[in-house]
Image 1 (tube, rainbow, N blue to C red):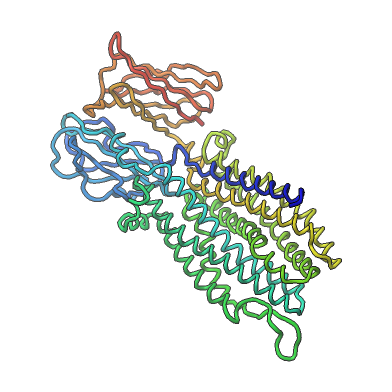
Image 2: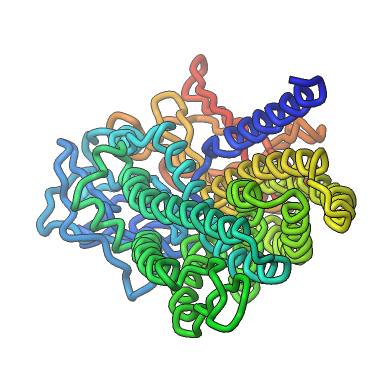
Length: 607
C-alpha cells in the first residue's frame, strides 16, 4: 500500500473511532430520566386521616400514564390494599389515583407510584399515611420502589441502541426512495448511453438499492419490536427478558409510546409490500432496449401516481412518528415543534441516505462503465445530490436551532442538563467536521470531477478522494444518529428546569422529603417532611432544625433558610432565597439531643 493510501486508511479509521466514541458517550443514560414532577398528593405524606380516605391521588406537573400497576398501596405486612387499576380523577391527565379496599384497619400504610410521562419517561416516588392512628410501618418507600426498579444500565443502553437503529432505518428508507426518484433516475436519463454497460450499471444500482431498502425495512421492524419490549422493561422496572411477555407488551401498546411504535411497525410492513410491488419485474426502473422503431436504451415509464401515493402513506407516517412518540407533540408550542421536527427528519433522511447510497450503491454501478462514462455519471449524480444536500443541510440547521431554542432556551440549560449537553454534541458534529467535509466536496471534489468528466477521463485520484470523504461523512452521520437516539431518551432542558423540585434524603432514623417551589431565582417556599424509617409516622424528636443554602461555584452563602415548625415532623421555609441561578447545596442539621445530631446534604438546580 502506498504512503498516501496508508494515510487515508488511518484517517478513515480515526473518523470511525471518533464516531463510535461520540455515539457511546451520547447513548450513556442520564442520571435523571423522567421529568413529570409530583406537585402534591391526597392525602399528604405523613397525614393521619380520621377515616379511611377511599382513594389515593397523586397530582403531577404534566400528564402521566397509569399502566403497569402504577400505584400500589401496602399495609405494614407488605400486603396490597389498593382496589382496581389506576385512574385519572375527573379525566385530568396530570392526576392519577387508585381506590383503596373497604374497611381497612387502623394503622400506617405506604403508597408508591411509578408512572410514565407522556413522552415515555418513568417517574417514581411515594408517601406514608395513617388511618385513625399510627402503627409500625412495613418497608419504606425507597425499599418498595427498589423492588420495582430492576431495569439496569444494560437495558437503558440497549434501548438507546434500538432507538438509534430505528431512526437510522427511517432515515434510510425515506432518503433512499427520494434519492431514487429525484437524483438517480434524472441523472441516469441525462447521461446514459446506448451500450450494454449502461444497462448493467442501472441493474446493479437497483439491486444494491433494493438491498439497502430491504435491510432498512427489516431493521425497522426488528428494532420496532425490540423497542416495545425495552419500553415495557423501562416502564415496569424489570429486565428485558421479564418484559418480553404478552401481558407486558399489551400494556405498552395501550400507551402513547406503544401506539406510535406499533403503528410504525405496520407502516414498515406496508412499505415493504409497496416496494416489493413497485420495484420488481417490468416495473423496475432500469435501462432497457428502446421500443420498436427506436434504438438505444430507455427507462420504462413505471412511476405512476398510484404507486407514488401508496409509497407516500407509510413514508409520511415514518417521518411523522418521531414527533408523535417524542417531545415535539407534547412540548409547547407544539404548532412550532411538530412541523419543525417533521421537516428535520425529512431533511436528515435525504442527506443521510443520500450519503449511504453514494457509498454503498453507486460505486458498484459505475464499475461496469467505460472510464469517461463513469466520470460523467458520477459528476451528474453528485451535482444533483450536492444541490439537494445543500438545501437539506440548511433545513437541518434551521429546524435544529428552532427545536433547540424551544427545548433548551438558555446557555445554563445547555451546559447543565443531559438534554442540553447532548444537543451541543450533536451541534458540534454537524457544524464542525460534517460541515467541513461537505464544503470540501462541494468546492473541491465536485468541480474537479466535472472537469474530468468533460475531458472524458476516468475519475482516478479524484474519485478515490471523494469516496474516502463520503465514507468519513457516513461515519460521522452515524454518530449524529446515535446522539439523536440519546436526545429523545432525555427530558427537554426546559422540562427539567420547571419547578417544583422534589428531593429525598436520609436523616439518621428518618427519611426526609424536601420540595423547593418554584426552584427559580428569588424567594422560594421549601417544605421538609420527616418520616420515621421504622414506624412510618412523622418523626418529631428534633429539638433544633437548621437549613443552610449555598452556591459554592459562585461564592454565595451559606445562607440561613429560616425553617419554622409547621406540624409534627413538618418544617416550612417561606423565605428561602436563591439569589443566583446554579447548583445550590442544601445542608440540613437536625439536633435531637445535647449530644446527638443528624446531617444531610443534597443539591438543587435553581434556574
